[in-house]
Amino acid sequence: MMTSRKTDATPPRRLSRRGFLKGLAGTGLAGSASLATGMFPSTAEGAGAGGSAPAPSGREASGSDGPFATLIDISACVGCGACVQACRDRNAARHPEPTKPFPPMFPASVKAEDWSARRDTDDRLTPYNWLYIQSVTEQHDGRRTDLNIPRRCLHCDNPPCANLCPWGAARREDSGTVSIDADICLGGAKCRTVCPWQIPQRQTGVGLYLDLLPRYAGNGVMYKCDRCADVVARGGVPACIEACPNAVQSIGPRDTIIAEARRLAMERGWHLYGLDENGGTSTIYLSPVPFAAIQAALEAATTTAKPGSGQDGKQDGGQNAGQGPTQNAATLGSGRPHFRAVADAMRNETMLAAALVTAPLAGAGAALLRVARGIGDMIREDACTDARNIAHCTGAPDAPDAPDASDTADSAARRLSTAVNCPTCPTRTRDAATDTPDPASPSHPLPAARWLWIACATVLGVTGMAQMPIAARYGIAAVPGLGWTADFYFTHLLHYAAAAVLLALAAWLAVRAFAGPRIRRLFAAQRLTGGGTLRLWLAAALVVTGGMRVAKNLPGFDWGPTLTMYLDWTHLGLAGLLGLASLALALTGRSAWTVPIGRRTPPASAPGTGPSSARHHEHPPRA
Image (cartoon, rainbow, N blue to C red; front, side, top):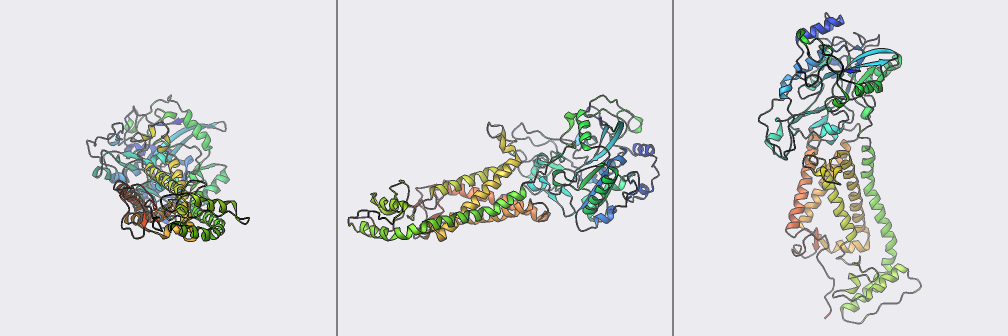
């Protein structure tokens, strides 16, 4: 049975020094030299050691070059709350101080999240409580086992909160710590949505959103444990580790901690959590009880426990001040993490990145095959087509030649197409067999490619916008059939798929423009407009920044927090500029990417047309 020390009905209290000392007295460790001196004991010391070899100290770990991890032996935790209070004290200056009254939200269904009046709540994660003790009682191997489990951010190796944050506010540091920059965060809570444990918590009324569009975008700042990154950067130790009298947590280089965790689990026949969850984390729990059993106890918890003696002898005290009302399954979720098995949320990133790399190669290969297949027909066709054009444009009668035995069916059909009459040049405008624009014409608009291009660009725009937390806020996801717009993982996948198709199409067009006789004729007589040039450069920059963002999401790859932030901003800004430019050009009737050589601007009478919207003739019309 999982035991929580408080419910919302019981006002939580901050653990006092006296209450803390009472907890120490209960463990027989009130005079612990490690606590008195502020030194961090290794895993081999204290209640959680079990005679294991010493792990590196926190100070040694903080000075290492690579990522470090923590090992939490939950059998050693007595729930004294020293770590909780130490975390609060060290980070008190960083806790939010909201501005009130809060700006009214639009739409009105958007609710503020205000913990400022409940700052002392310590039975869950909040913007003011980045670590709490989760207690559970489990019948294991025929005996009752009471466990107290420090819960905080697990600091994933490939964190979805950092990878999918649209502003670059969440990031993974070189130390392996995942942090949120309160100066950048807008409080959209996407990080909480994509986090498998729903760790980050929001406080309304603080942050950058107040200076931007407080009514329409943003809702505060997200907060969570960052392993005292500022202190660790100076060679210090996270407060929770330094304050623990029982050496519940060990800290060190990640590889060393993982090796130690595996060794202890094998020697004791115990269980590990966090080693493989979500693709691996930098917080590893060691437990004598299977974590599936712990999770089952959490879900089966009832509210039968009675309040115990609180801090300072009062009833219903702090989190660790005696047995309180239990926490039932309904309270598990945001702010109260679970212990379920978690698949790697970013497991598809390598496959998606490979798809984006191979897409242009596939498009180029398909174009080369198409060119090779049609080049023979073009050689045979050009001679008779040119002769007919001369005869047609000089007014001489011309009849289609009968196909001989050496002609292919496709070549014969193309030659017969010259019998179609049209106001311009019959041999270069219509195909008798299909009644579609002849690809040999420089004004051929490549309709299929053009519409595919528009469709992919639209999907990219929609899914790119859906990566920002707006679909749920503005009720888009509530529209029948549009629920997927609030699924960040699905829209992320769809964004990649559309990008892959668009890259393949671009490569296909590029190869055919340079190697395909028919498409080459189309582009040879055209030049880019000013709007086309602008959009081409913006699109190219989007491809570059998008590729860098794809690399950022790969496991083990990191651009660094600063570059990642600017990369996210640049990609988002370029997408916005491209959308605005395209809209402005469409509204002014200048959406064409190209015009015939010699023409200064595209015709305003044909808005929305593609690169071949303006008709162009090689020969003067017949008299």
